[in-house]
Length: 316
Ligand code: RIB
Picture 1 (cartoon, rainbow, N blue to C red):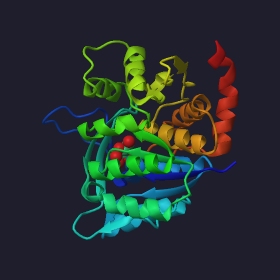
Picture 2 (cartoon, rainbow, N blue to C red):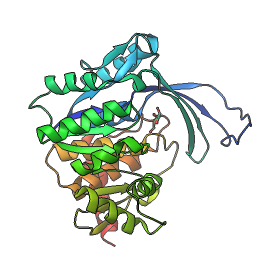
Picture 3 (cartoon, rainbow, N blue to C red):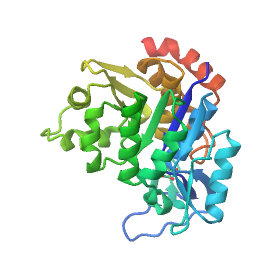
């Protein structure tokens, strides 16, 4: 079954160096050839969702430059509708400078460029055109906070299911939490959300997720890398979904975006939160086996196959 997903977030061009280790402050490390890939949390999630079988519209902004043309061309080639992307004359297309080490860990610096120039009007115009269209809206915070607020508020106003990936946690999302988005923080972002709500200390992930979920009255799904996810329902009950071991970890860049795209796509297709999170985990585990954020993102059938083979170990 197909589902309709509106993705609001950043698109970047990723410039990647594979090096023997990540540099420390003030240090230079030398790798071999520069690799260029499509990136940005919004663009990556949109591609993951499209490959997982959803009809996807991407909302964001690029500069009027060669990188922007390339970024939109890559999304279009994946079947993502980019008609609602704003072209900003005053800004360059977003770019990320990435170093990846032999264990697949990375270090990323982002030049936000046009992503920071997304306006509420850009979002509301896209939402207006998408009226009655989405089954779910996926929003990530790598764009202007005004764009994030407009997207989450529009989803709430239309009664659309909304997934908010707080990467990074911006103080400006505090007021959005009462609108009940499904949050998908990683471990560090969960702690930031917990403190943003004025909660003290550094308790367990389960305790922090339950506290945040009691505030949003919606599920909180915490991504834990190789450990899978912890999904905490609005009732505070936690549920662990383990990840199958990746055969070989080449590059973890975009694994969280793969999770978010497949999770939101699965919700849009009618899956419940636990099943959707399981599909997201399976897809993210596959995605780390190739270099580049999007290269290893799997098809719907590959996700189904991974889910089927993971079933016995997930029960033990
Ligand atoms: O999450 C990975 C992404 O973060 C990269 O593709 C990079 O562009 C940064 O936005």
